[in-house]
Image 1: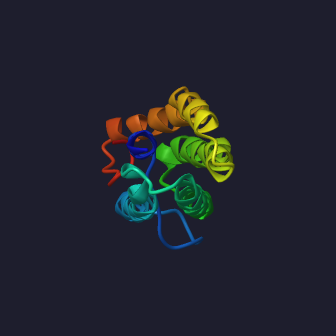
Image 2: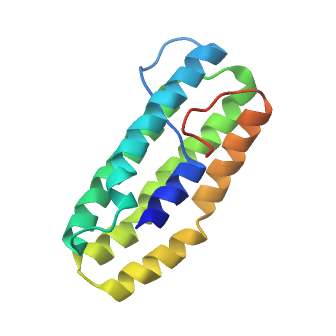
Length: 151
């Protein structure tokens, strides 16, 4: 299950506070770092072999909630103008990834190892991860420090 953590760490990041005016670069970087840490913490159990598929399903449910919470947090933010589009792409990617993890969570909840393997294989080709990675790579090119986002 370490693959799931690696996939997420490579594509994602994450958040803090809410609403308000346009964030400065440093405020936005801090927000990304906070959200990224929350996601990493949620996915940490997935870096080790779960004791059961039921445990995997439970861990994935928490991870999905953290991905959605980070997406919501970043969606509420008004990022610096130069990364506005990247932020929107990242938010969409986090939400899509949370949705894509549902097939893995469902397979684990059904205690079906074959479905789990298929879901993992499908995640390797995740468009959400590719898009999120592209957004974070673009932010890095613009000089942003992303914390855990962008690998």
